[in-house]
Image (cartoon, rainbow, N blue to C red):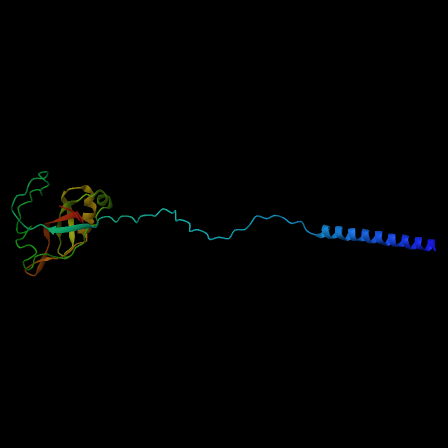
Length: 201
């Protein structure tokens, strides 16, 4: 009888010990499977402030003053002008004759009349420097009304000469007619003035 109780007690102790070991194993396995928690920095959500425009604003280029070019046909006259170099005067012109400067030039019937004129280009370097001036040219109007034999009589600056000659070479006139016959007219003079816009002179 005592042996039976001893056997039962021993079995109960073995079962209890086995259960204790099993519980420890399950708890250890559960702790091993649990992932390690990592501490991540907090994420802050906010609005992005407007970035100031640091680009340098480019100012538009200043437009140069608009040049003005005036062509003036010199009327026939015997009045003597100031000599060159005296206050910028026009040199003395030769005394007009019937063949050179007919009276009523450009007005009388049969005399030459301008049909087409071109203003010369204002030299860019003279615009940037603000230089004004004039050129006096002398030329011949042939029987066809074209211009030839162009020469410069006076010029305030050589930079104006080339463009003035080019422009005058393109002029076209109604030729002079005498008794129904076209004739050439020599020593026709014209003053080409180069002036800048807003000029005080």
